[in-house]
Image (tube, rainbow, N blue to C red; front, side, top):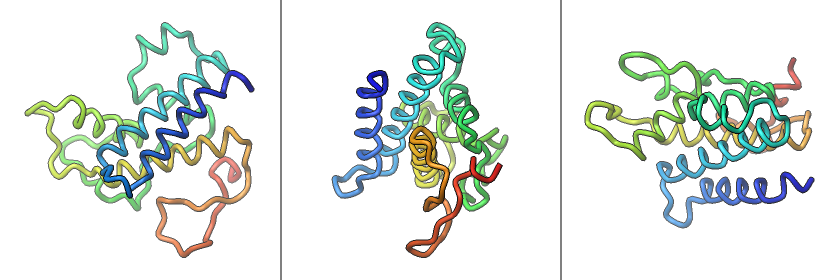
Length: 169
């Protein structure tokens, strides 16, 4: 599909960059790249492909977390934070609404730091891992995969797989 050629190529480029730990990219930079890929996938799927929302509404009315929520929920991808990500559950004060809020707020703390919004012991690693998991699922869903996959959020043996979340409905 012509519509997806460039966005998918760009999203895969950022996704692979976010995953590549050999080139000195830390999980903080990986999280930034991963959110960039997710936002591009959300724009392409929700606005350009499915026309679920207008360009203006997507750009002006939705927060970054809401854009990612729209993408995930429309693809039957769970939004809740896995219990395995204990650092993302250990936030002081208010808890994150879901994984998309956690990813975007932690990313925003990196890009737009401010003294009063500094995270205590920021859970960069888990937010990075969660962002990659979301990309894994979005790509699998866009490719119409309904079988099994290796869930990066679970402690598992090599070759251990589980059904994709939308296959369990």
